[in-house]
Length: 213
Image 1 (cartoon, rainbow, N blue to C red):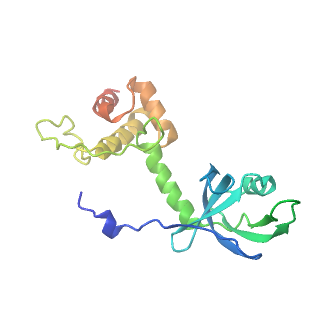
Image 2 (image 1 turned 90 degrees about the horizontal axis):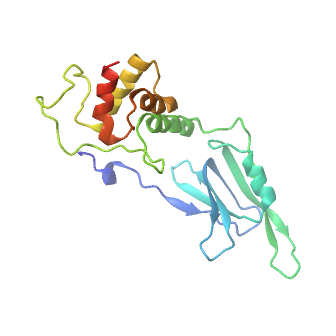
Image 3 (image 1 turned 180 degrees about the vertical axis):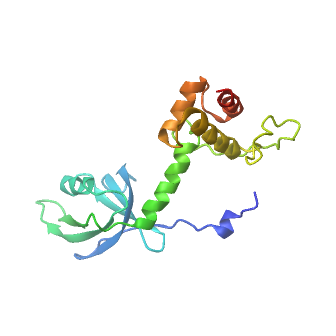
C-alpha cells in the first residue's frame, strides 16, 4: 500500500459540548447518537453527535432522564443541521437545579455534502460482503495471481488478484446473468442463485457459478 494515511488523511477530532451558562449553545450536522453512555462520572446520557464545519465532532450529552428532549430528537433525521441550547433551569427541591435544553431545527436545512458522502459509503457496504457484525470486509489478497493461474483471462478489465476486483466482476456478472443491480438485494440474490455463501473464500466459486448461467 503506497498511501500513508497519517500524512494524507485527516485526524477525527472529538470534543464535548460544555453548557455552563444559560444561553450556551452549539450547532452542527446531526450524524449519530450514542445511547446510554455511562462513564461513571455523570448520570447515564444519550450523546448526540454534531459534525462541525471543520470536520470535528461535537458530542452533546443529555441525561437519559430528560425524556421530553429525547422525544424531540426522535423526529430529527441524520444529516439535518440542528442547534442545541441551554435554555434555562428548573428548581428541584433538595437537589441541584435541573438544566433545560432546547432543540432548533428545520427539515429543509440539511448538509448535502454529508448526505452525498453517506450515499457513497452505503454503496460500498451494499456491494461488498460483510462480516457477521455487519462491518464491510474489504481485504486485499496477500499473493498476486500469475497469468497461468488466472482462470478469468477473458475478463482483462478486472484485477482478479484482489478481493475488490473479484467483487467488481461478480457485480457485473450478477447484473448480466441475474438481472440484478448492485445494491442491498444483490448479495442475497447471488447466494440464492449459486447456492454458495458470499464471503472472501468463496468469491472464485461464485464467479465460476455465475459464468455458467
